[in-house]
Image (tube, rainbow, N blue to C red; front, side):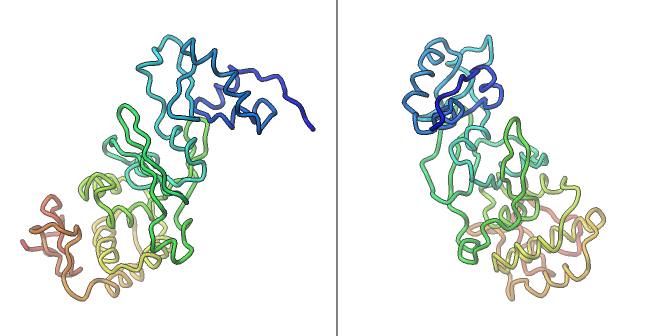
Length: 273
């Protein structure tokens, strides 16, 4: 049975600035000895070289920084808590490099929901994979890998993020934030976008995505086949994009009512609802 190996703690922290007790135990060559790993941590916790984020998760504190006020990287903490989680909604927009703002909520889809983790400026929220995707066995549709610091993170790509953002606008900071952020996406995979829409099977999403893609037709060059499919799948009657909201602009072409903060650039689409 392999024994413990000499651990160069500084090298470990450089590779894993946020880590779990189990990851430290594995690095020590004793995967099952989490008590031994914690014993090694005690000195570094006392000196302020390491900070406990929540039970079982720790972060390296940069030299010269007070551990009491140091806030570790939100994405690394979330990934340590749920290594197989999928960053979604506004967190995905941020990791994809298109978000217009930094938001105070960071959401992961994961197999088993868990209590939120409260950091000083961010709440990490762990939600189950949306039910339509789980029901169809499509949990991984539209997921990609994004490098961040020392980790490779699972993130909903632009296609899935746009669809899920229109489905749950409050999770992306509102429709306006979604529209402004997603407009910076350089390219879309329309076959994948269609696959995500099929997985959700919601007519208002077909309409919202169809309108949004057509709005950026000159940038993304969508195939007419895709836009025709969106028109075919749009709602039969007019629907509010954001449930519970009233007023806004009616897009007769898409049978969709946008919230008041969104003004279509193509005037012939809309009239006041």
